Structures are given as C-alpha cells and as structure tokens.
Length: 393
Ligand SMILES: Nc1nc2c(ncn2[C@@H]2O[C@H](COP(=O)(O)OP(=O)(O)OP(=O)(O)O)[C@@H](O)[C@H]2O)c(=O)[nH]1
Ligand SMILES: [Mg+2]
Image (cartoon, rainbow, N blue to C red; front, side, top):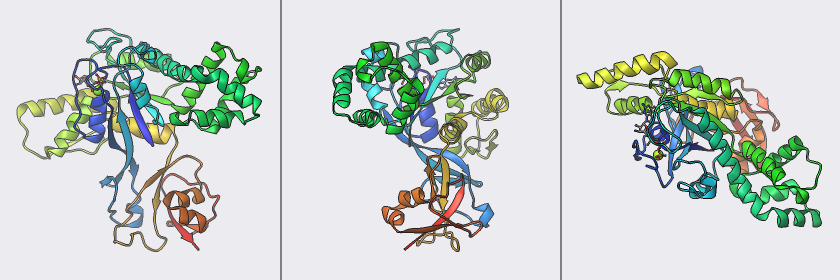
C-alpha cells in the first residue's frame, strides 16, 4: 500500500510527510521546495489486541503505545502540482510520473486560504479551486497517456478479439490499473460505440473515471490552525459532499511529535491531549498552550493520524490482521504478536495464507480464530482486527 501526498505547492505536503514519518525533509514557505519525491514510512493506528489476550506485544514492524498499535504504511511526498502540469507547466509531468505507483492520494489543501494557485503567499484564496484544478490535472494526466496510443491500441484489441478490459489493464499496469477497475468503469459509462470509434470527449470521460477508480482521493484540509480555516473547511465540505474531507494541522503534529521525541511531552499520535514531562522554556510552553487551544481542543486532535487512518480503513476499507497462534501468541523468537498486516477488503483466510507465504497458501488446511479457537475455512472473509493462525499440511 502506497499513499501519495499531492497538492499545489506550499500547502504543507512535506510537513505532513515529516510529521507522519519523522524523516528529515525540507520544508519552506516558497513554492517547489520539494523537487525529488520523498519516500518514507508512516503508520496507521489500530486498537491492539494485546489486552484481550492479557499480553504485552513486541511489534517487529511499527510500534505499540498504550495499547495502540502503529502499523507501517508507505508514504510518498512529491513536488507541488500547478495548473497545466499535465502539459509540462511547473515541474511538469515528471512528478505525475512519480505518482504512478500510489494506491490512494491524500490531497493536501491549504484551508486557511493563504497560498495562491502557484503556492505563493496571499490571503482570501478559495481552497475549493485547489480541489477542482487537481482533479482536472490528474484526469488530463491519464488522458494524455491514453490518447497517445488509443487509436492503434483499441483497433488492435478489437481486430484480434482480445478482452478489452484485460488489454487496457495490461497497457496501463504501470499506473496500477487492474482489469476490474476497467470493467467497472466501462459498465458505468455504458458507451454504445466501440472503443476504436470513441471521440476525444469519450476517451477523456473514460480516462477521468478510470483515474478516479485507480487513484481515489481524500482531502486533508491543512493549516486548520490559521485564521479563516474553519469557514473554508465548511465551504469545502458543502461544495464537495462526495469527498471525505478532514481538517488537519500538519505543523502542529510535527511540533508535537518532535517535542515527544525530545522527551519534553508524552504524546500519542492522534490523541487530543499531551502530557508535559520535560523542562520547557516559556516559548515552548506558550507554543504548546496555543496548539492545545487552537487545534487540539477545536478539532479533537491535529488530524494527521486521523487522515491516514481514514484513507486506509474508512476509505479503502482495508483490514488489519494479527497472525496469532491459537495456543501461543509468540513467534519462534518469543516475540508476542510480532506482526499486524493490512489486507484489502474482501480478503479471505486463504488470501491471508498466501499473503504470509506462498507455501501457506498452497498447503492451507484451515485458519483458527485465536480468540474463539474456532476453525475457519478458506473462504472466510477477514474482519478488522482478526487474530488468526493458519494451519497447513
Ligand atoms: N500554520 C501552518 N503552517 C503550515 C502547516 N503545514 C505547513 N505549514 C507551512 O507551510 C509552508 C509550506 O510547507 P511545506 O511542507 O514545505 O509545503 P509543500 O506542500 O511540501 O510545498 P512544496 O514542496 O513547495 O510543494 C511552510 O512554511 C510550513 O511551515 C500547518 O498545518 N499550519
Ligand atoms: Mg514539499
């Protein structure tokens, strides 16, 4: 699973990325601070199952704080996109290319309205424009890739009687397009003409729908700590009811995580409060008080963790699964509940076995629910926070 952070310049993509990963990346108030993409590991937060088993887990990936398990997800922060990027404006197509492998986008917008379309400082900018332009650019990006080869490609598929959805998926596999995505889109559009007869408008419609399907997007309304953000967030939510829109303050999350790393405060990402444990000077104390009053008390958290969780669990509907022996929770090295994995919705016990190891899949006999000790067949559909043992031949 790869989450791409996208948006126009200076909205706080790198700040969000740094807050989520604590990787050292450049952050600045001028546009195009980021040029080369940043890759890092962030975490989604899951209620750990350790308590139910009266145990203390030792995660081998991620970590567990106060019963909250943080499960790794890959994040990518790219250069800012500007209008016309698909035609080469700004930094052009290069970083659209960087986004090819993303499964989902978090579109970071500046909800405070203090950056213009090019990422320069301004006031009173309507963040609704950001949503419209980004959709447009992403759609054109898919369209430009399709249009180049469409005539020849569609004619060949028809002449040779090749399954069209499969052919499109193959051709665009670099964009993580799969056959079912194409089938769903074709069904939805229900065009009468054969693909080789489609006019540009139809190819555009098809490209846009496919983009929406393959690169779905949620919106992080960032800089929620600043002046007009509250009003703008409401405006965004009213104007775009089809989107999940969540307020956040990446800057606050970064400050809290850094203060926590420096052992000045105890803070669990995503919580609405923190505890002072170190010696703070007046400036640090003032900054933390302000954050508490302007962000945590208003929004119930900084929103960064919530946005990541929303993308993975509410939007993509992934489930977190703990491999766990029915009689023993630890692995061969004595690590208790060492792993927690994210699987796509609808995954079965057999999918989970294959996910763990091809041999587990091939030799699958049954799964056992570690809570109830009940046996589950290969078609069992995994539920969020299941704890399962796979029994093999
Ligand atoms: N007040 C406030 N400022 C923020 C927030 N997030 C980011 N900023 C500031 O916004 C400016 C731009 O942040 P970056 O993270 O560099 O933005 P970016 O989207 O990565 O920009 P490019 O790499 O140029 O596309 C910096 O001055 C940040 O400190 C926030 O939540 N609140
Ligand atoms: Mg950046």
